[in-house]
Image (cartoon, rainbow, N blue to C red; front, side, top):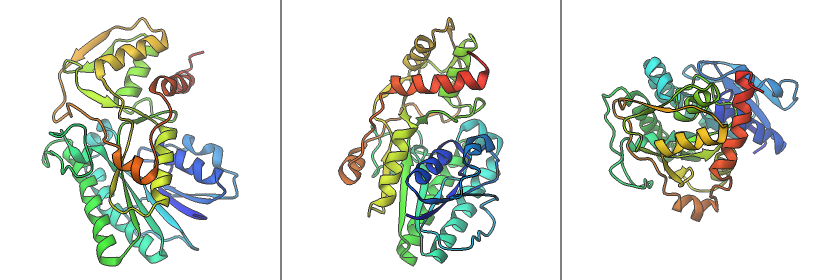
Length: 313
């Protein structure tokens, strides 16, 4: 890939992808409207002759001069606090935005990669979740705006693949963490990290026995790049299968930060998944990929970032 477009490129994962492609000598066009992304995530890239930023809403017609070899569609609110606050925008970027990005890739003859999510599995009845599972999603629940937007995005991507012959990829991203996550993200890791570093109670929902599987962002980016360069068009799970309960995770954060924080409990949000663990058999077999960074090591790297954001030495 010599020139790539990354929509949502100023977001948490998108900005790390910008770094990766630039490090490999590619040109990167980063597109973001800063709805949930941040200029801080890409500030270090301005001045790089191979980096171009366009502030733009991808739900509108996309036009960029010159050739584009790949389109990576990462534009979307991605945390519950965001898509509950921005339900219409979330649905629009998953539907209209995906349609516009696919149309642009088709016009350029570019390979297209859709950033999908483990949320397409909903509150799963299969555990761990493998790609053949169709999911257990409440389409009219409060989380449905994100879940169904991504499910629609996958359907649209496969329609372009089958009808137009577009070269497409779909990555289903499981819980990912690392530097550049927003403090106010609302997901469990930034919330726990901020609370622990400030000495506040860590807020667990329900009884804290629901599970998540956390993948460090560098591992995720490696998986995404391998998928993009593969010849596989069906969805692929990318995540770390090392499953942990939320209660265990809270205790781990407290220990690693050296915090005196306690754990408090609140009612479980509507349609909150009880379990989340990727089956990465396909990623291993097709991409030769599996995560390398242990969760503890990734958390140590991330603590330094959050300390800096909070002004803690």
